Length: 243
Image (cartoon, rainbow, N blue to C red; front, side):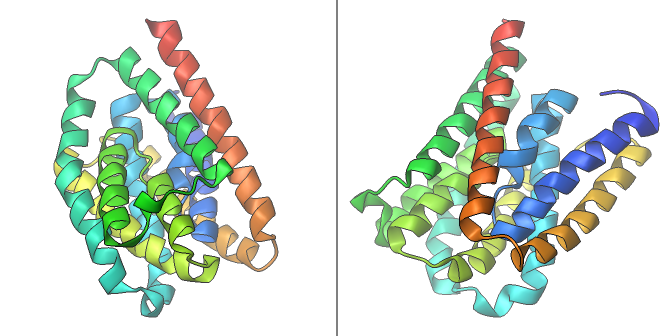
C-alpha cells in the first residue's frame, strides 16, 4: 500500500464502503471490502484487518439491536465456529501468498454466487444446519475473512426475515471476529492507517444506518453481491498472476 496519508485515505475509503454494507445488511463487510484490503495489504494483514473492522462495525450495530438477538439459536453457530477458527488461522499462516490469494478469491466468488442463487438444502436447517454453517463460517472467516455467506445461507434455509437476521448476524459477527483475532492477533498498521480505519468505521456506521431507511433490501443485496463477485475474481486473478 502507498505510504503515508495517501494510502491511509484509500484504506479508510475501503473500510467505509464495507462498514456501510455491514451496518445496512448485518453481513457483507468482508465481501465488499475484503478483496480490496487483501490487494492493498496482502492476504495476511488484509484478512486480519477485515476481521477487526467487521467485528467493530458489528458491535456498533449490536449496541442498538441486542434485544432482538435470539441467543439460543445463535449458540450452535458460535460454538461450531469457535472449533474451526484455529484451523482457518493455521491454514492462513502456512499457505504461500499466491495460493492463499487464489483460495480467498475463489471462496469469495463462490460464496457470492451461492448467496445470489439462494441455495436451499435440508442440511442447512435446524441445529444440524447451524452446526454446519457455523463450522464453515468459522474456518472461512479466519482463513479468508468471509464468514458471513455461510450464516446467510443458514438464515435463508431457516426462513429468517431481514429484520430477524440483521441483529443476530451482528451478534455472530462480534463473536466470530473476536475468535479470529484471538487466534491470529491484531493487524500491524501505522498510526495514520489506524486513524483512517477508525474514521471509516464510524462514517460507515452512519451511512449504513441512513441507507437502511432509504434503499430497498433487494437492490442493496444485488449491489453487495455484485461487488463481492468482482472483488473475488480480482483477488483470484492477482493470485494466478503471482504464481
